[in-house]
Image: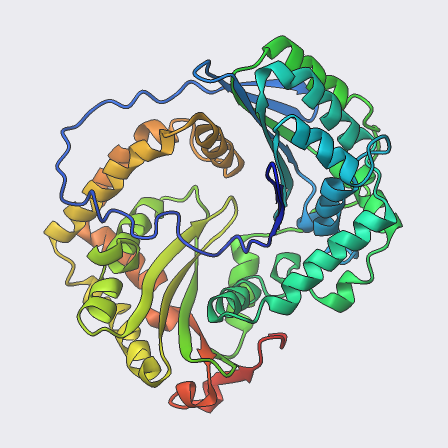
Length: 479
């Protein structure tokens, strides 16, 4: 969930983090470009510890007099325990709209806006992220305001109610689109039985009290690990001093909230225990969505590179992929057709998605199964694998398009415990993948009988699926 403001408007955006692909049609413009091998100078990210729980990452640049700052507070939904899952989102909203004890409610936002600060707060499963961009000349004032926010948040009843109202509005609208439903149900299926598999609910939202907000913030979020990312133009000594002082008042106490355990083994066991092969979400819509989803290993796994290449060929390569070419271009059956692997520290998953007309749902389903078969994996050619390698290797440079993105990627790779020279060796490891590797990972992770299917549509759109292997639900039903 993201709360963000611009100079003139307060904007609330609700984000499902598993939705979408980083590149809508990855490789479309680079697959046939033969680029001579070249050395990419991997930026030297400097990291140091500012305290027991504070990691500081920097990548300075004086191109513009602007400082970009990210503060990652590792106290997210994974640690709420018996508190409602919505607690962290309410904290984020209340921090944004409640301000500080000195500048409560809209006064805090007004102070930032008067300085032209870009300010966002967003949450996910493991952390809260605060992002600021501001002029170097205003650094002292911005850091003073930020320190007040983090050390003395107001958490007013008004701001908590306002955060609840905004979240409730998003809950009420989340079934308006087929996309929103199918991606939410995918998340609920993958993480069934876990905190991250819970969707926000209004009845649970209303149970969150002011004391819950204050308790979790001061005893979990404030005392958790922090990662500080800073790029652009800034006075390093002053900035580090500000940050150290900002968190110097932390209490050295035993953790009151513990983080949920998440692993490949837990997800695999839950996935296999779910007895239904198909989840049929009934809703009166004009177009249906077909999602096939399966589990992958963690980010730092030897199969990672082969999975990347096979995904490009099957559905991740835009119009170069089987999905887009055979389902959309050749037959005109899809509005959208693609696949996307998601890798995290302790697990991964992949989804194959097609949006189509109600009357063509069965045909699309059968085409997806045909593509996701050992027979098709065995027919991949050397030319196809080389095209995929070219595209992926050529895209690599875009990881370094701006300093803020470089730092964010570096932190993610650190969080996922990737090898020390992961970036330096990435293109070489992609180049090592063979056709046999693709057949192996295809059989292990991509083949349709290893996947589960979610269909969102009218009753007529999925009547072809066997009832004994299917569960029919509605958008707000629990799996």
